Image 1 (cartoon, chains in turn blue, purple):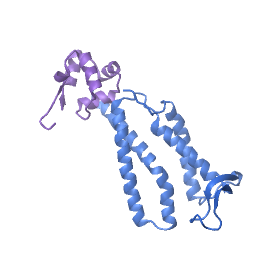
Image 2 (tube, one colour):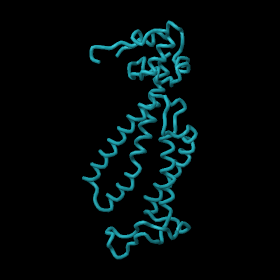
Image 3 (cartoon, helix red, strand yellow):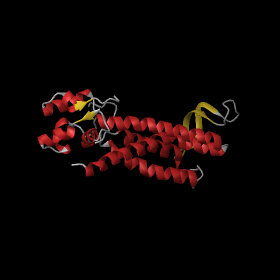
Image 4 (cartoon, helix red, strand yellow):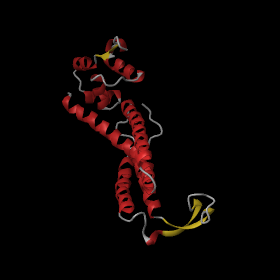
Amino acid sequence: METRLLLPNKFKLIGWILLVPSAILGIIQIFYLAGSGLKLLDATMFTIYSGSFAPWGGSSIIFGFDKVNLTGTIIGILFILGAVMVAFAKEKHEDEFIAKIRLESFLWATYINYAILLFSFLFFYGIGFMYVMIFNMFTIIILFIVRFNYILYRSTKQLQYEK
Amino acid sequence: MKNSLKVERAIKDITQEELAKIIGVSRQAINSIELGKYVPSTIFSLKLSRYFEKSVNDIFRLEETD
């Protein structure tokens, strides 16, 4: 079956090489550095909106330049690129059966993601909810990768019992 | 839906791996069909039909619940 909209198989390896280190760095940055970053990555960047919670707040900048730290930005970008490559690179034998697993895993990941978010809406408040939002940016694709690869692994394992 | 893929394969004395290669699908797909866990597309079924030189109706059969 012709599968459009997927990346070539070789992106899978590149994806993992980006995904694993950036996930580790991301966890270190959030939990051990409390979101602060390397001095080296201080920069002045163009921003669409940067500042306090309300757009009319005194210190916010709209369509201007702001002094920012790029540690989280870079880790986040690398993670997203890696995760997208891992999730959307073709399998070696991409066919309609794998396409079905792919689609089902997406549905499953979306359900679970919103179930977790609903739970978090009820039980996390204040800065705690901000952490939930930070992780929730990445959970759909992580859940998808885990579920898709687990089902593939399971259906490959079944082969050992069949001749 | 039931299918006699495993039987057809035995008649031709061909492994899942070999059949998968001929049809151009993954081995998991062939296995899942035999286990009744996956219903192949029309194109897939017609390719199986062509290979086994049997009509699709001889390989796949509807069940009461379908």
